Length: 588
Image (cartoon, rainbow, N blue to C red; front, side, top):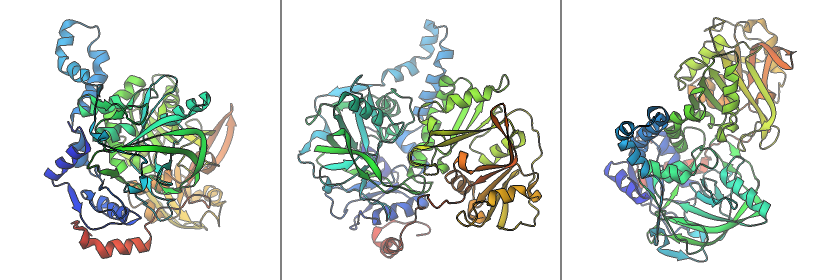
C-alpha cells in the first residue's frame, strides 16, 4: 500500500522507472517540453531537483505508462470493485455460509474509510504568508496565461450537509497569495461554491499537492454526486486514509500530502483566468473564474511538488482516465442495469465520445439507456453517444463503427438534441458551456452492406478521399472559411452513394493515419446540431428523419481555439540541452 508520494517515488527508483534531473530547468515552457518528449517515447517519471526560481523539487510523468499505473495501484482495486459489484447477487438471500465464503472481501471492505490523527507529516512546516511564488509551478504552452497548479487536489465540503468533495480544478497563480480556481460545470466543488453563494458565505478550501497516488486517481474519478472521493482513494490504497487537524482552517487535511494550501473562495469574486492548453489538444480561452485566496501553506519539511502536462492525447491523463474506466466498469450494470458495457474515448478528451452495449428487449429500449447514460454525473457531458445491443469490444473503434453503420437506420436511429449544456473546454458550440448532443443506434440485424473502397473521380472542391473503415469515408478539400457550403455539394453528388457516413476534415492523411488521430480530429471538431448534415431531412412525428449519406463537418472553424504546438524557441532549447538532462530515449 502506497501511503504517500515518496513511497511511490522509491518504488519507481527500484523499478528503474524514474530519472533524476539535476540540471537547472526553467518552469516556463522548458520543463513541459521535456515531459512531452519523454511521454511520447513511453519514458520514465521525471524528478527535477533544480527548478529555477523555486524552493522545492518537482516530479512529473508519474503515471505515463501502463507499467507505472500497475506499480501505483496493482490488480487489487479492480478485483475488489468487481467482487463488490457482484455482492448483491452472490449474497442474496444472505446466509452465514455465504457471508463466510466472502469473508476476505468483507474484511477488505471494512478497511475502507478515514482515520483521524492528531498530527500529520504535512503540518511539519507552516508558512504564513504562503509565498506561492516559491512553488515550482509550470507554464506548459506558449500562450498559457501563466503558471498553474496542474495536479491540485481540491478539498471542499458542502456548507449545508458537510459531505466532502475532492476535485481537480486547475489553479493559475496570480501572485503569492491568490490563484484562480477553474471549477467547471458539473463538478462537485462548483456545486459547493453555489451552495455557499446561496448562504452568502465564503467557501473554505484546502488545496492538497502530492500524497498517495490514489488521491490523484480519485480526484478525477467520474463518481456520482455525493459519493465521497476519499472513500474511493481508501479502497484503492487498501487501507484507511489518514486525516488530521488543520491548524490554519476549519477543514481537515489529508495527512500524507506534500503541501496543503489553506484558504477560501468568495462565491461572488471573479477574475480572468487562462488561456490554458488543455487535454483536448487546444487552448481553453480566457474566462472569469472564482478566486482562491490562500492564507497559509502547510508542508512537509522536505516537500516535493507534483505536476502534469496536458495536451493532444495521449498524455499522462489518458492512462489515468482509461484505468479509471476499467476500475469502475463493473459498477455500470449496478447503477444502470440495462447497460452491459460503457467506454469513453480518451483520444477525444473523453467527453466528446462514448459508446455502450445496452439491452434491447423491446423496441427502442436502447434509447432508455441513452437517456440514463446522458443523465449520469459527468457522463452527462458526453457530446456523442454510440449504442449497440450486441456484445462488442468497445475499444476496437473501427470494428464498432462498422457494426453500427451496418445496422443504423438514419431515419429513426440518429438523434440530435439541441440547446443543451456542453463541456466547458469544448468550444465547438455557439458559446461556452452550451451546445448539443448526438446519439446513434446500431441495433438488431444488419440492414446494409458497407463499401470498403472509394472509386473516384473526386468532385470539385475536394482534394482527397480515404476510407477510415468500411462504410466511413474521410474526405478533405477547401477549408471552412472558403467553402462553408461544401457539405451540401458533397451530399448531392451520386459518387458517394452507398457510403452511410462521410467525415469532412482538413487533412485526410493526418486523420486516417491512426484510429487515435481519426477520433481526435473528428470528435473534437464538430458540434452535432451545427455540423451533422444529411442528403435529405424530413420531419416525421416531430422527429428529424435523415436520409444518408450522413456527413460530419470536422474541419477547423475560424472561432475554434488553436491546436497546441510547442513553440520553436522552446523546442530548440530542449534539443540543444538534451544531453544535460541525462534522459535516455530511443529517438531523442
